Amino acid sequence: MRISKIFLTASLLLTATIVTVAAIPQDEFKNLQVLPKNISAKELDKIMEGFNEGLGVGCNYCHTKNVTTKDLEFDKDSKPEKEMARKMMLLTNDINKKYFPESKDIQAVTCYTCHHGNPMPATDSADFRRKSDY
Image (cartoon, rainbow, N blue to C red):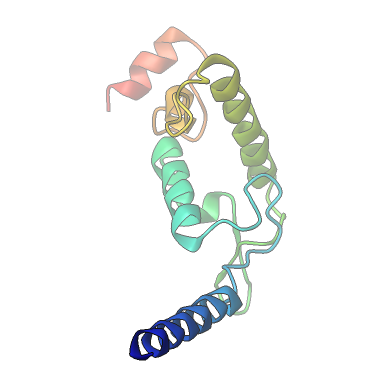
């Protein structure tokens, strides 16, 4: 009898915990067109940091600042660089899926593959050598 009360209490607590966790809203980001709508803040930050490193730029390269508050407006599409980033994400996703299907958790091709820390990728070997020397 005592064991069934303990089991019942534990079951109720577990159910209450699951319901509570399920009720917590997931991170909501506006205007995600390529990335998953339910992406976590941690994963989104990791991806954006990859863009920063791969292109050698800051967040304001693709995102505009609010004139009044000076805060970045991540959901706005005011800059053409943001649309180009979306196209580049689709391109690298396609390349990775087509040519590196065994690397599901690792991106073989990233922004850095072509950009090497520069906003614009090198267009010829002389340009590549010059930029990669610093």
